[in-house]
Image (tube, rainbow, N blue to C red; front, side, top):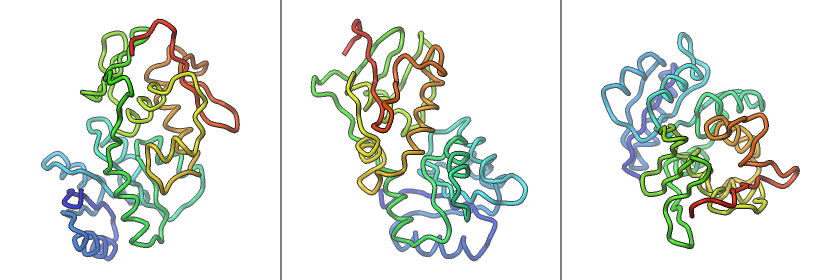
Length: 234
């Protein structure tokens, strides 16, 4: 998606200029906003494929802006920040970001993260069946939608891809690295915190009791296993 439309949100004019110049040179269509408030207004008017969002801005900060965007959109979001603590990464992902990049970063690194966030995993089942159904939950590959007891549940693209990948490989422990590379891309493999956050988000949406999961089970020091009920539709 080299012609993808990207919104750069940062309160520093120099950063916005550099990002706009560099990304435009790569074929992306770029607009910018200097605040979270302005970003939300722009997003209400125009369609974008991805948002590059600074975490530390005056007024409405990046986390608040990300949460607001996520309430009504599945757009890809990459959070940019000068902080590299695990708590900050968790906060960004919990707010709805798909990825997290620490400043200063190289443009090749950012380009790789952008490509990862824009990619859509070509999910499929060997059986050719596009719907997985169990216990009143339906995961539909054709529409990329999930319903629980007949109610449609909003999933971000990465959440859906992770859920579908797990559910279509049931009852086996899938290592963290394999999951990361399958969903985020070949440049990933050690960002286990991403999986912890995204699995937690998915559990909140499909598990009867997220604190005692029935479907997505943790395999200590290995990865995750999707426990698919015996009476299920594949």
